[in-house]
Length: 60
Image 1: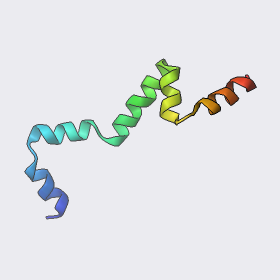
Image 2: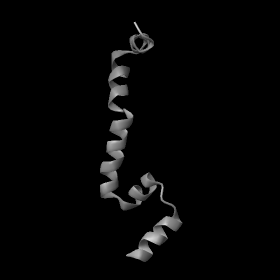
Image 3: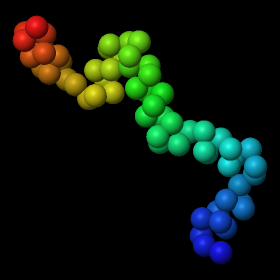
C-alpha cells in the first residue's frame, strides 16, 4: 500500500469526490470555458500585462 492510498483512506468519501472534481485539469478547463465568455478574464488567465494588451491592440 503506497502513501497515496494511506492518504485517500484518511479522507472522507465526500472529500475524495471533491478533490477529484477540483483537479488542476478540471480547473483549467473551467477557466478556459470562462475565458471564452469574458475576454478580460482570458487576458488575466494568460498573464497578459497592460503593455501586452496595448501591443496586441496596436497590431489590430
